[in-house]
Length: 422
Ligand code: JFZ
Image (tube, rainbow, N blue to C red; front, side):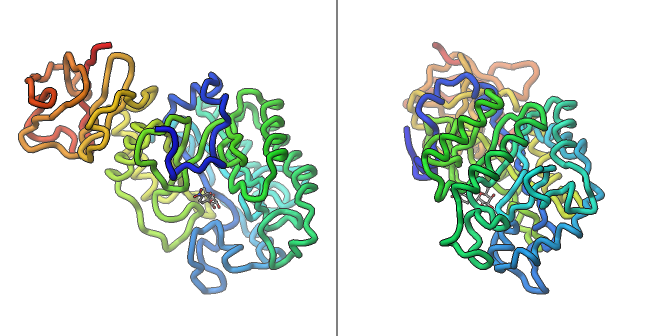
C-alpha cells in the first residue's frame, strides 16, 4: 500500500529518496531514542501553581507565558545530574540505533552554544555546558548515531518566529528574515560544530514555503551530505516521511517512514503524567511498525535535573532485553511483500529477510498450532532456540500448520523463524 492517512503527503518523502542509499543505515535501524529536553522540564506541567493541560513542552504557549517571564527559567536550569554517557548507554541497552535530541524546540531555547542568540544553555544558564557537544562526543565513543530536532518554523521566543502572538504582532513578523538570518545560520552551527550528524528532525512545517524547505534541504546536504532530513521539513521534501505523533498506519506503507511516539502522554517532562504504556504494548508497537516498513522513534523526557524518568528506563531496558534475543527479526528486516491473510490478523505480525519470514506471535493459540497461509514455508524453528530444533509442519486446508510448544515461550511476542522458498 502506498499511502495511509497516518502519513500526510506534506510530511512525506521526496520521490527520489526511496532509492537513496544514504538511508540504508536508517532503513536497517528501526528503533531510535527521541529526547525532548529544555526549560519546560522545570515547570514540568505547572505554572504558578496551576496545572496546564497538554504536552509539557507546550507550556509556554498554552499558558501564554510572556517571553520575558519564561526566559527567567534559564537562570534556574542547572541539570547537575546530566550524564551524556548514561543517556547513550541507556539507548544502547534499549537496542536503539540512533538518538535525536531537541537542539531547539518551539520555546526557542537552544541546548547548544550559538553565536546567534544568548538564549542558549552555555550563555544563559548556571550550568554553562554544551549538552549537544557532550552527547556528540559520547555518541562517537559508544558508536551511536546522533541527530538533532530543530523547530524551523515555530519559535515563540524569536520576534520573527512563528507562533507567539501574545508578545509579538504577527503582522509585523519577518518570517523570511528569521529563516534566512537565524534558522539557516543555526542549522549551519549544528552541522559544523558537532561532528557527523545523522539527521535533522525538522518539525511542524506549517507556514514554510517550498523554496524555504528546499533551501534548508540543500543547506543540510551541502554541509553534511550523509545527514538525513525528516519529513516535517515541509512541502513533501523530506528524506523520509513522518507519521503523525503516536500514529501507526493500518497497513504496509511503501515509503521510508517513522512514527515518533511517547511512552506516557507527553514529550517534555511533566511531573503528573504517570500514564506509562506497558513494555508489552511498546514491543507490540515496535513490531507492528517494523512489519509495515517503518521506524519507531520513542521519546524520553528527562527532568530538569537531567534524569530520565525511571519508568522510561525500566521499559527501555525491558525492550532491550527482548531485542537482545529477538533483534534478528527486527534490525535489517523488510515488510513481507506478498499479500497474505496473516497481515490483517491481530494475533501476529510478519517481518522478513531474504529466505526468511519472522512470525511474531502476540497471542499464542491454545495448543500451539500456528496456522500459516500464503507463504511457501520449507522449515520452522523458534528464534530463541539456540539448537534451532525444527518445528513440525502439517498440511492444513488453507496452507500449513506449524506446531509450536503448547505454552507460549514468550508471552509478549514469540518469534518463529519460517524458512521460505525464493
Ligand atoms: C510536534 C511538536 O509540536 C511537539 O511538541 C513534539 O515535538 C512533537 C514530536 O512534534 O507536534 C506535532 C507535530 C505533528 C503532528 C502532531 C504533533 N502530526 O503530524 O500529527
